[in-house]
Image 1 (cartoon, helix red, strand yellow):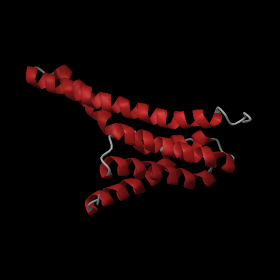
Image 2 (cartoon, helix red, strand yellow):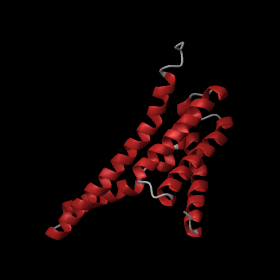
Image 3 (tube, one colour):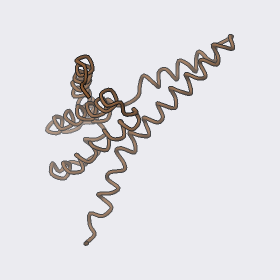
Image 4 (cartoon, helix red, strand yellow):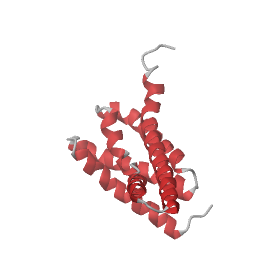
Length: 163
């Protein structure tokens, strides 16, 4: 499947933006300066992978988010001990560009509009938008949490056992 130039440009711009967002967020938590390039690369890779799967390949956004978070979590499970830095230092900042702000905003605006609505048709539209955006927001947040948390369960649980 060939991607159009507009789609490729959108993925590249999102990747570059995430590469700046992740280390900026990491600096709020005093991440060591030597780790910031890894955080930037992790943020860019996470957003690029999710956007490529979602926009380019047509994968559902929740599944694409889980795959992107799990991939970055696996990468930092490997790199964390080599750099002598705990994995969450990298992964938490790397996923910040995946937070579903647009869906949360839509859900909140729909809730406020629903409360103030006097027309039945408008009320049902706001209820639908609230349920759709709210559920999608919650599902993306769950995918982020599971994508970060599940890979270490497989690798850290058996690391001290002899086979």
